[in-house]
Image (cartoon, rainbow, N blue to C red):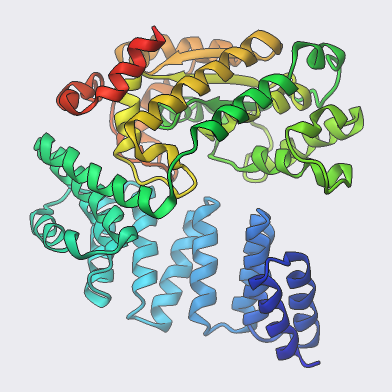
Length: 486
């Protein structure tokens, strides 16, 4: 077989879901001819599918070395840089792609997202408009452009979005609907904003499927059953004893990014962003046990002291990749890590947990207005959001009751009412001395890759508190969920 034959074999394995076979085939293709980009790209995409993002980035880099004029390789590498926080490298690669192909709408779109992450609205808007001009209507770029209305004039873009909305497919209708909702909300046209958000969520729900309450409830019950108080008592001296990890958890839009920005502005802390490391370690536990017939979390009881220690060590290593060697705390602000606090309690018993909370009427509506990925089916319906919040609240109470983790509750409302008092409270919890820089978090120039990227680049403001009242007539399910919970 030739190098090309092995490459096609890798593609075939990947299409059928045989990732191990695809890896072997791509590697054989590279071994026979390492001077073409395609097998390196194939290998990288499989590694990404397996959450080996740093390894994938290196393979994308090797693809550009194999063929320096390969535009797609440049774009893959740029996006990999961006997603992993290497923003300077990402910009260089996007610009190299544009040197090779000045009409690459994908390169301009990637630059737009990068400039948003860096808090550069005018540059972002220019890049998005260039992408649209090359590849109209380019709903991805249009949707992001509509979200920049606080910073630039988007009146013509609103008109274009209104014209397009009814004739788009499900995916594009969701994108433009979320963007149009933000544009209306920024202009204080609240009923039209909610209408646009409702259209977006209906399209996303049709695309992704409905949220299954029974499956969700079963998952909560399983975790509570598996992670009993006895399990932690019997393993009280297990795990990796590093006190470097800090986990910020909660619902999305509950103030996790704001909290991370405050902590990350302290010179002894490093904000690592939203890491997927903990989820990857949890779901890979059957591999450690060499038992394909088991699954997480059922297999938690089967993990030995050595395996638990290895998991803790692997988390510390993976989360430290970009952190300066001398920082005392590394902050992982993946909100949905609340699912995995049982594993944290076993493998990282000295980790600190900051649990962010926010009025569910504000938090829930903010979730409803955001373009989350297809896996977050619960985020497309107000009743589902209320149900998810109740289950998450129950699970958090369980972790507090059965683990010895140090957990600090931080209220979004209290943080914006008295930021310094909450910042002092957080730093004391983390064992850190006071530093005035934590109050100037909005001046932090590092990239922010969450929907809160623009809010955290401003001094604290209170306009997001009780914002739900502007939409009260539409928020019956969230209001009912809160009343039931009280």
